[in-house]
Image (cartoon, rainbow, N blue to C red):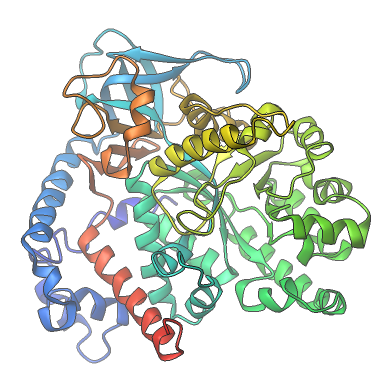
Amino acid sequence: MDSRHKSQSHGGGCAICNAGPDAAGAKAKNPISPTRRRFLREAIKTPALAGAALASPALLAACDSDNSARRESSRFASGEFVVRAGWALTYDGGNAREGDLRLVRGADILVRNGFIEDVSSSPIRGFEVLDASDQLVLPGFISGHTHVAGGSSTRGIIENGRSFARPLELAENLYDDELDALTAFNLAELLLSGCTTQVEQSLSLRQAQSYVRVARRWGVRGYPAGMVPGIGRLFPIWFRGNDQTLFDSVPDTLAEIDANLTFARSVNGIENGRILPMLAPHATDTQTPETLRAIAAGAAELGNGIHIHLSQSMGETETVKRLWGVTPTQWIEQYGFFDGPLFAAHMSGIDLDVDPDIMNANGGVYAHCPSAGGAGGGTQPYPETLAKGMNVNIGIDTHSNDYVENLKLAVLYGQARYSLLAGSGTDMRSPTMWDAVRGATLTAAEGLGREDLGRIQPGAKADLTGIKVDGPLIGTGALPPEPLNNLLYAHGLAVRTVMTDGYLQVLEGSFVADDFAAVASEGGAVTRKLWGQLEAEGFFD
């Protein structure tokens, strides 16, 4: 069942400007026991509860813009229309290494029934036209590593050295509707920045369930999994004083794997195949041979792959070498982790003499996350892995949901790392925006085994992102001759059009899959609750 269209409105209006025609009767339908979700929605209409900022002229203007964009999106509800792109990054066949990405100026892209039916440099007539003539239209971005619900509650409070651990632990104690509100705000941000597919390592089974509930509402494509051990059990095992703690954790970890597998079976392939769950061991230093075998068996049954933090620090690599005599990459290879798609995040502790050959031979994808640990959180071996010919994707991780910004950070951090370490004797290649965009599209799609994703080509899924590249601060007032270079000056607010399976989620820069003012207010209320708990514990002292 495809449930995405059910979320088109909550009464069809804006919760700030005035909720839609059903709003007046909503409270009467359940006058005795209003849910927290309804309370949050109603609260944003009450200045005493919402705060004066919610009534600001800027927010009211944004609401008007969102309403206008939602009305405009109805022109494309039939699922048959032409995207008229200023530039389109098309694909002419082959695989991610051998095929050619090609920029086509003035391309028409015919979308029908969720697929790209035609790509033409001449006008395609007889259909509604979505005007993207000021935009660079790209395949929808694929983040190879996210923890969706964890983003906004940590952003802005960890950058000066505080740990992210406690905010994430507190989020696990939220009610389901509060957790959904937190998930929704972060997932909306990802869509607004052009990320249509997430390889999602939710921090627990509950958070994976929340991700699926929200993704179904909005037609998001996802490969979700609950991290094992989950956030509630993770830190005593990960930061253990002795290895007996790890060995004693095995029965509970096996039970977690079984619970995640049970949920994954129940949602595998739902929403016309947009939800394809993986299994997600936290990292190799929190696993044992018994748990690796269970994960590999469950992943083989599901058929969608494994998502793991791999050699995310030298400490992890040294621990696995001490316990099992091999690198983390060698160890997971022994247990069949590469028998399906494998997405490995961070790899800051990579053994460049051993691990790249294993990753390359098995088609594994390294998810490089330039904003891991928050803004300024350090660099990762992007230039080194490019030089080794590895499949490198750009991942979001946790704290920044601006995919365009992360593309830019990957390139700029990578170029800085290359310049600083160029004389070290390590083989490196300075990254370009072409590398980053290829990683965000073709490379990730190939890693997932999907020839219908990550490309603008007839027969591919109509997952598209349009970025305005001619405007202030990014462009020059004219459509640029080499638009990928302009992404080095861009950010998520430049994203104007986003769709998955031809279903519009962002139009004219506005979130049209739902009432974003309500989504933001509900998510913000939950974050304020978490920050209040942190303040009471002395977190900010």
